[in-house]
Image (cartoon, rainbow, N blue to C red; front, side, top):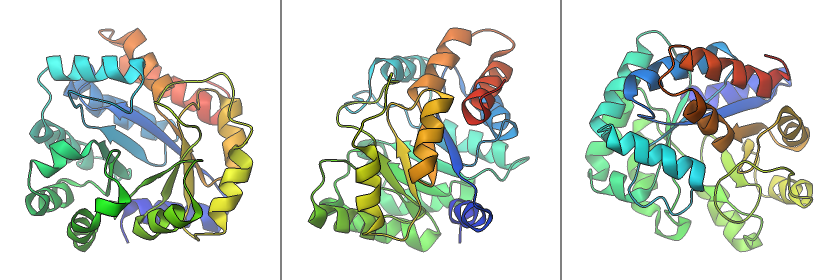
Length: 264
């Protein structure tokens, strides 16, 4: 059992819910990413998603696209991200999920990648554009190294496809709250409750919801039905607003605490 699985088990036993913030690794630089992850943990994060910058972020909205551009311009590489993870592990056991497109992972070589991720201290991988139908080699390579394989499931997924997705997912199932790209939203979909309840009939695994969650009210609404709430664009926008300032990590930590607890 890795850190992601252990954390969700602990939360389920205590009746708690997970808060899962996202950060684009290397935005604005990897030194800041190290400090931000530790600040988010102190603010109450349960799992942290580390985004791997990719030159063609087709599933991301403008906020995360800009973060990806800043990260790539700063020279961020997968090697640099893994070294940052090792530094995080020197003082933290926060569960870490690598959030990537498939090409940067596949180009590394799946066998080599799995060993490097496990050695550095990553707990799971989500390849956002990898379809479950083509995921066999990925799943078969990651799991023996103790890495969770997390897949996205959308409100438009058929019952048959939901079954395949939850069958390939370990750690938790990532439910997309809406169709379209990432981005903070004003309101959650009115169909979210029904969607999560349909998922419950297909899996006993924890379910986390992401895309469009940007306020404490959104987080609490998700927690009423799901096991975790994932927040990406709202946090990345906060990083963008404070980039270059000495209080960047502290500001992100306060924002995470506000989202999670409704207070700074």
